[in-house]
Length: 466
Image (tube, rainbow, N blue to C red):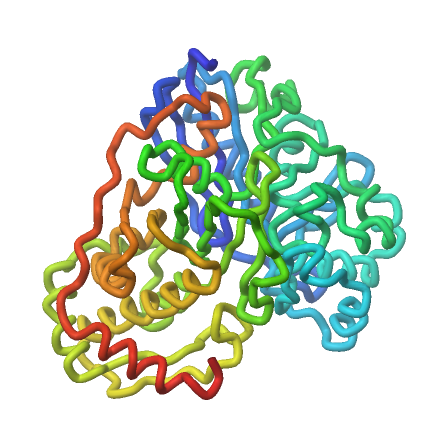
């Protein structure tokens, strides 16, 4: 068990976050940086260089603390390519479009959904499609390269030790067989499995800080760095620290750029029964177990609808005014239909549109939250979510959203926890699994009003493509 402090590096799609934690699980400090993509060779990329420089500067803030451990966390749709021990090129951003011919050729090689639990997703959301494109662009480099998932690249950045890990490999990558706990047949046939760095468990220490990083940051050279894990799986670990979730039938809805529902099923997982075409998938948790999941780009859609950037704008102010706008929105059935981000979520082919579009800013914001609740409710049904639901992350403080979700699912106990630190706290539990959250879960009070009639109208309007 750690006696000193732990740093969690959480490198998501929208935000990079670095937090400092005591051995007892108390948050001591937190730094945040909005992410922005770069373009290299005509391709949209992750700014690994800028992120790395910011990370080193941020770690230096903690030089006076007794740091013992660093844990990297990252989103699951990026791969780092090492050549000669260095990053060969900036990793692709998963929103980089894949040429139609390239994607068609790649998809002829994919394994069936029943094998991988990984649906065929747009752009570069399947790591396999990224690797296929990179092989075309950089054939010589890719033939000799070492591959790392995004979270594990940062462990390598800090230690010089390359490792891979299953929560990232099992995140709609097309590369992993969750039931066999091994690489999928395609990954072996195409030679990618042998290119990935050796497997490590999320909680394994892969090494200690490189001397030059220790010198530049002022941290001890003895700071150990864990392999780390996928961000939504870290949120799942945090949720398991609550008695209400723990070993019960429960679902965690992690909210950020993506809304990801992950079900802790008490029964076996039938991957073939999940509707692949509606953005359902099977994740793999930190213990290697399959987790039925569903997702949609809820954060991006809400930001688009209310025309603010929630990375920079606090979503909590004016909650009473927002709640006051709800009765009018429900009564006049002012609503949004799917889907702003086509190709994603339970309605991937829906045509976006407003019905009775509200002009009032608070009503539009309330309608956006109701829209997110409607889509989330559908996604939860697709994976059989029942009994308990924990909403965590950036939008767990959006009262209209969580209270509407509770009203839509009256047979489910809906909870919220700490909105900002669940991913980091989950990573911290890799160091000490006995840690329990300092705060308690709060049961969500359902929203009042004719939400059932609102839902019936909403589903009737989208029935043609549901």
